[in-house]
Image 1: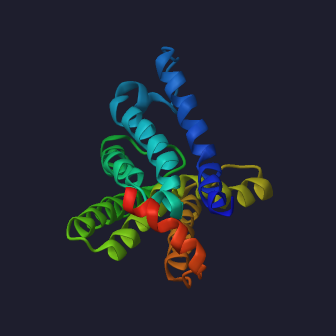
Image 2: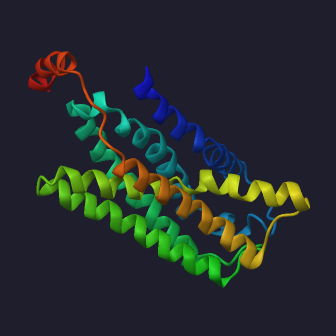
Length: 219
C-alpha cells in the first residue's frame, strides 16, 4: 500500500484547482451573467475549457505514473501516450490565455511574464521527456516528465502559498505579492521534484525481484 500514497497525495494536491475548474466549466455551460471576473472566459471559452479538461486528466493519470508497480507494465506506456498530449494542451493553453486574455484584476505584467516562462518550461520538459524515451534514455525521460508534472501541478501548491496571506490580511494578494506567491508554488514543486529524483533508490529484496521477473516478461 505504501506505493499508492504518493499518487493519492498528488491527486489531493490537485483537488482544489480541479474543483475550481469543474466550477468554471459548470458556470460556462449555464450561460452565466457576465462579470469582470469571468468576462474573458465567456468571450473566448475554448482555451480555458481545453486547459481545465487537459489539467484534470493530466493530474489524475500522471499521479499513477509514480507507482513503481505500474511502471513495470505496458500500462505506463499506454498512459504516457495520453499524458503527453494532455500535458502539452495544459502548457500551450496556459500560454494562449496569458497572451490572449486581459489581465485579471489582481495580476500584473510580472505574473503574466512568469506564466509565459513556466508554461514554456512545462512544454519544454514534456517534449524533452518524449525525446528521451524515443531514444531509450529512460533515466532522462523520467527526470523531464517529473519536472513537467511538477510545473503542471503548480496550481495546487499555489492555493497553499496564498493561504497564509489570506488568513493574515483577509484580502486577496495582488501585484508583485501575488506574483511572488504564484511563482513560489511552481518553485516549491520543482524543488520537491528534484529531491524526489535525487533521493537514493530503495533497496529491493532479492525475493521481490524474483517475484517481479515473470510479470516483467509478461509485460
